Length: 553
Image (cartoon, rainbow, N blue to C red; front, side, top):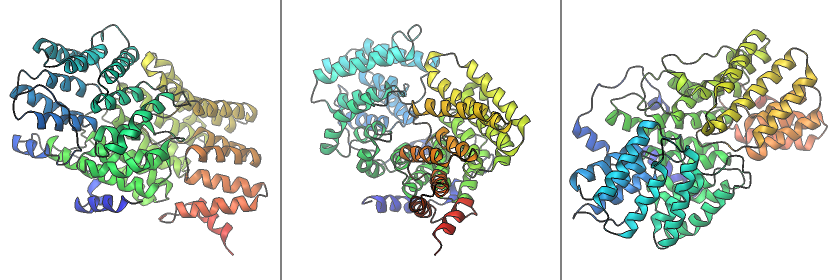
């Protein structure tokens, strides 16, 4: 915990409080002055990067700064900085490389056709200018493998080609720190979520961990190390980097948020809350200065992680405030996948984590947004509605939501969206299983839940989410308890805790199951852990009351 006090100081300096992240409908102004834009772009320390390029005098420090910002996925700012360099030094070919790199977000959603065309145009501009070194030529040639055939080749094929090109570039220039870092990122970007050996992430870590020892303030090394460890068996390895990243780039929203990926994996809810409060505040300030008010999209992503952490601690008052702030958003800087996911998941989590089935059944899609952009994000809310309907006796709601899940699943046909197809398939199966259970078809319900849990277990989550809105295996535990099979339920809850440590409801479920099995020592241990997690609970959670009762002398 050595660096948490410094993070707390950062939060204090920017006056983070929950009231500052609550949105008021319609805030902001229609335009932003150039002076305000320049001030907002003054990000202060963004880490240490040295990326020598052929350029006019005085350009190199700005280029290094732009690359550092790029490493922290502050894409709109890195593009702006690289574009400014192209104006100041029209002969700097690598500035166009930077523009193209800023238009491709390897760990986020694939770029659309507009971004792909712009990226390819930027690559061609760099090639037309020419290069001052073979190293520069190699960087642009590697990036060209991603953009060149964008009209014909699929995203994954092009991303894999870029990864191979970066591997060759890094081998050719073994002392080039940037080549090594970008190659590690490319390995993470091409990892298969179904690969539970985490082979590509481990290859990335073999590159990044030795470099982190020698270059602890390099934003790309620290950032990509965290992403490489965003999986249960690996998370502990990134804890030092997670605790350090916010110090490297204390005004970059994504840099402040990224430690929460590791804190979430380890069930470190207090640290997760601090991280995301700081990220939300930095995003709010950036949006106010640069985006004309409204919400900054990456801030809303931080809200999803923040909501999740508050709910695990039983801090329902804070969680409700986050939910209300998200539902009040009317303007956002960019309508991204992460934004739509949070827009659906935050209210869904608030109902489901509290097992408020009636509230879940009454959820509606927030109005005013084009949900057809990312229909699989709608599935998250329909999943909540289906569970809420089935478990509160409103079977007509459950059937309607389950049918919508089925339709969304059938409509996902693009090969690059197969991850989301699997996720919606799990949600569809879980909804159908609980509907069958409510209708008295208990054997079919249990078989369906077991299949859904197995499918969910076979795939890793993407960075867009802190975790399943409700884990299928945890819900399997609930069903097994309803069927009076506490030993099997205990296994399901325990398995959930192995991948999602210190989940409040999984601890509560394990406590109930262990008590029902006569395993009183195990039940008391679960209750002790639950009360430690929920030490700051502010509501009347049933599971907290049960844990206190069990431990009462």
